[in-house]
Image (cartoon, rainbow, N blue to C red; front, side, top):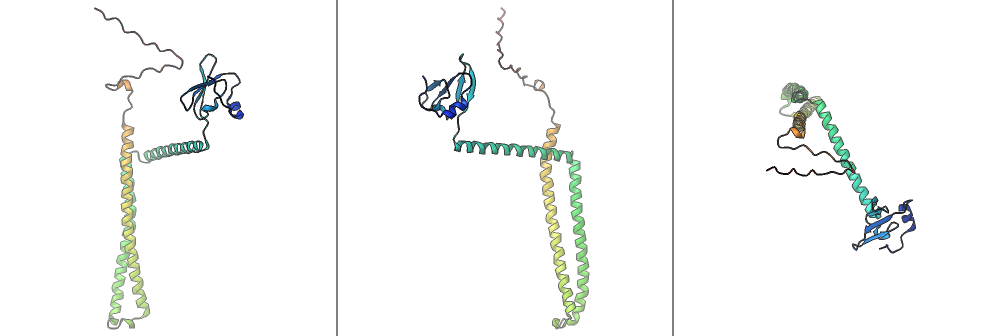
Length: 238
């Protein structure tokens, strides 16, 4: 049955081949339509172009609406972003393995990072000790003005305030270093968990399927267009 209806001429011309063919599709009502040019009733679905001998020349995809094209493009962008993200993750894994080929190298770098933080904390603790000694001397001077601290010289009171502020600053600095140490340990712990999986994957033997117990070798791939003949079973001997 020839498809009826008036198709947009530009659409038909864009899809029509140089050699006459037969177009076939199933419309929205489930009817199979055929025509000698692209079928307008199947503009939203797949059409097949057949040669005069009945073989499929090509499959013409549906013409999408603007909304469908936008959705398809968004899906393609999402898939592209996911592929890029996966490629970036593989790159980071390779870089991580190159930096830490073994747990010993990872442990050594963790230790070095903690040592550097401890050195800074030790310097801050030494500064606190110096400030405490300075405070003892300042408190000794303030003994003369214990009954009336307002009479203490302005310079002495200023040094006491500066000493107290410096003490608080060093204490905050040490607390920040302690938080940084916990953060460093957490980062190295997460890296180590990932590295153990990567190291295990590297050490896993890559055996061909035929050498694995209980696994049969894959059947050979039949080239496109070849005829694959299944051999008949041999007759059972008496």
